[in-house]
Length: 139
Image (cartoon, rainbow, N blue to C red; front, side, top):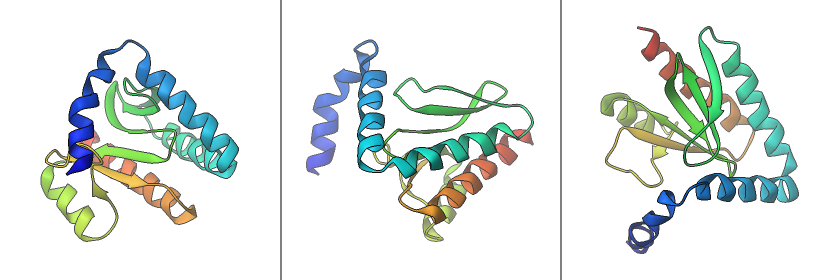
């Protein structure tokens, strides 16, 4: 409840030019200091996704790395280790029921899921989730 209230009142920040990119850069610096191994994991995810035909990466409008398939977003990885991927609601619910993902950290009623990358197993799951999104876009 409190989190929703904070998000509501701070949502104006996303309209400030470059705020999200600066904030995400601060998150990345924090990760570099507190847990540098995670940055190697993020690179591993990027390298794997870029092996798939038609994929690219770019900066996400709210900070982090955006994964694309022919200019359509598959998902994005924030520098604090939150991977967000968009699915239809049926796939989203199955992934949550299977314990492979959580509700999106902000947009709970959407098709977005979040995965918090905390360990090596989460890296493999992140790649698998992005691959599921990739396959659905390829159809």
